[in-house]
Image (cartoon, rainbow, N blue to C red; front, side, top):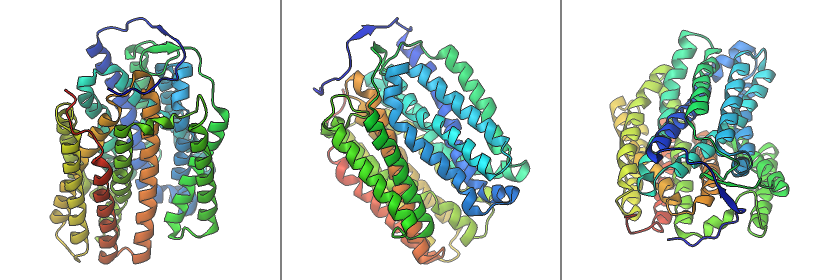
Length: 477
């Protein structure tokens, strides 16, 4: 058992919300809908960039800011998740996030020019940035420790399946309807999630997200002024460097260095302050640190490579966005199915046995993609089959590693843990996307170029096995 100390204020009990299994099921019902909406939105918008550019008469570079504004708002608000739950309560924070995201979606559908669309996407990002860490905290707090893997499997399904289903839905909406519907589709879903949240989520007092109320938390303003802008600048610099294939350009280098400096300043403060915005002392825990390292490298390789598939099918093979999305659907089904099995197995199997095996499968699948994509005119089924091997590994790694990271943490540290995991995933995906964009830009969207980019992703996945060796060798039972 871990012996980490708690910095929480004196607690007082809150009313018992009911049967634990019922509470967990209700929490999952709400959070899965909310997460699916947010994840699908990000991938749907990516498919519609060219149509938005045509509709608003704006350059593709300008329209790209609709994605950038969302990401920057996401990065700015994620660090506040633990504080907001302590101040407002997990339920109130989650419902506020849902309302912001739904309102932002409605406003985006009514945008009259590129500038208004960019602004309304930032509103969406403020809500979307809180949905994952707050939802994850509520699920971890409601789940019995022996069944946490199963709960995380269900709760994490949108994060893995959404990026595959999104391009299919986005391509269909753009081709069959209009760009307005890529945002309007969120409104009824968001309204449903809000209604269910009001009815099904257990009431809470200001809390750390685990059912334990405490006095109102004080905001670490200096930490917030370092971490939120630091993350936003860092992600912006990485995105600009990836788009232009040059991290040395002032537009990429300056924000990257500024963001890194602010983030480093926050790390120093977080390790010395009595009540930091984000408790980085969690990294002193061997298991949590091993899981964070594993996820950082794995998300860097996997989510970074997600840009390669659509580009390969559309630019190299000349297929439509809808067809490209459909060719990625089998991978999503494999990921979802495997994750449901693996996340339940992690309740009974040693993480050091299960997770490295998944990493090996994922690296093999990515290496097969590298090999196949370098062959001009390769049969599509061979690329799809290779991606499905990758999907098996992804399903075995992501949610089981998150479960392992948080399973034995004290209840009062779950909010900080879920916030750290969310920031880690966002940074890993951004670094991977930027690195592979540059690699593809240097070699070109040709078979050798795709082979190089996929090979880099395979190496990143394989490196994730090193920190995975720090994960527990014994079972939870």
